[in-house]
Length: 155
Image (cartoon, rainbow, N blue to C red; front, side):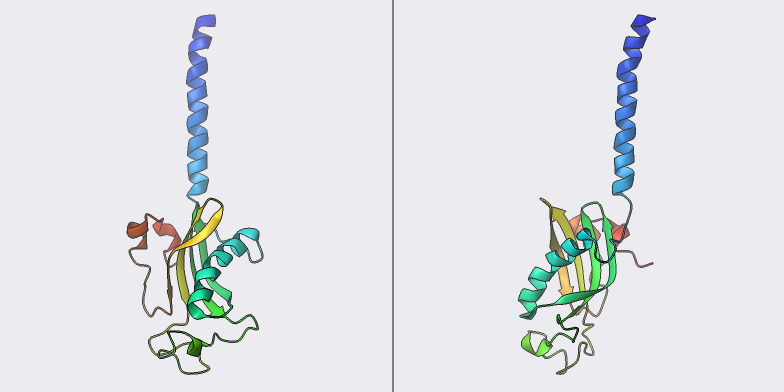
């Protein structure tokens, strides 16, 4: 009987390891939405803020319409605003011809920022983003970047 216990021990260890891997995969597969004010949500928005402020030539905050996270991937649809809550001044940007002065949207300009971000080395960085898309600009990002489709599905 001692001999059979030694054989079972490695088998049990392998089964335990396999169950841990499956549990970790399941939790990585769950789509979540970080709560407003949470450190993760702030880190994601801060990662997006850097290139958006550079492109818009002004400081912004984001009104989050959608934020989905799965593992090291995040997808968001936001509306940028000035820190005082007013609309972004698109007259200071390359989008000035798409938006009338004082407005946040135009005929073919949504005023939204749609982004796919990835967390690497502890930092969220945009993989791709679009300012003012008038269509489903994220279609195909799952295949192009290997991102999980579940975070981009409209429910």
